[in-house]
Length: 269
Image 1 (spheres, one colour):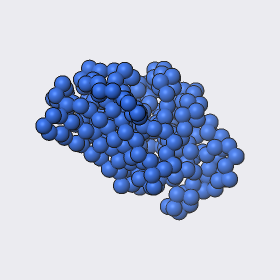
Image 2 (tube, rainbow, N blue to C red; image 1 turned 120 degrees about the vertical axis):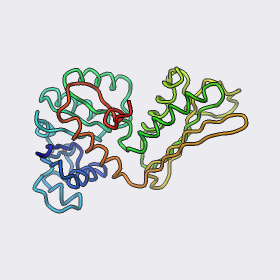
Image 3 (cartoon, one colour; image 1 turned 60 degrees about the horizontal axis):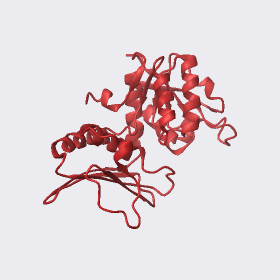
Image 4 (tube, one colour; image 1 turned 45 degrees about the horizontal axis):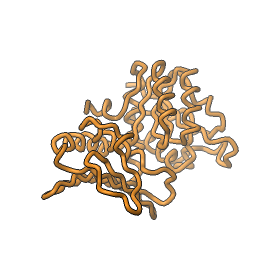
């Protein structure tokens, strides 16, 4: 079996380096190109050495357009503004993409959906297998308890995370809302302070914690009058996200244009 060619944008960052490691660890994947933002002092360095796996001959470039080719899957865990520019390059070069960038707003998601009409894109709030199983289980629990329990989501991350709630928490909220026929944009409660009034029975509440070096903890609470149920996932290493992204890249390499997520890859739909 031939190896799937991979390109990584933002490969010099913390997550980018883990993606480099994950590609190196997978026998069916090979890293062919890697880029970092213009002006970075990492440009020209061997990305394998930076990632701690030893030289692999792939040098970091500051021209992301060279990463995108029709026979290469590109993995992007950067920032929303960069990702939306990268998607344009992917369309121009017919490159499949795996996108793990968080904080993309509704207009940005609409741009990704439009691009997915011409190229295959895997876009997910979280690439952990465990988290995606949590989405599925939480949706089933919510459906069974609809009307007899209140839904609350708690998430905790490291102090350097810049968006809140996390994309994973929002994904969890979307899964629960869809299961019970609600629109998260209408029922999501993202802050409580002062005299908030009585809780709306249809609300899906979110609580955010930031501190230290927490990789990512998520809990879905189903709170009834006489009993409650909690489903929790704790990430112990960011490698779970990188490994999931490489799994997604191998899967999407030969797919038709469309917008996919980890549920498609894991057969959960």
